[in-house]
Length: 62
Image (cartoon, rainbow, N blue to C red):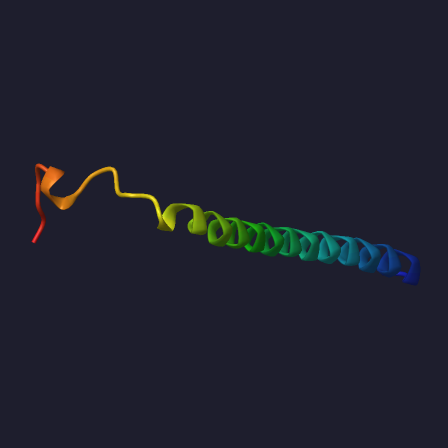
């Protein structure tokens, strides 16, 4: 291979790596937002009564 072809190949590799890093960052941001929303909504449900009790269950697992 000549130098120009190697540079083009390296450039493509860098583009691929950049896309993969962006995907990882997007996933981690999504997970962080999901965790934050879960924690914030948990406060709303802590004081709410349960809709069903254990006695309401027809099947009980041991």
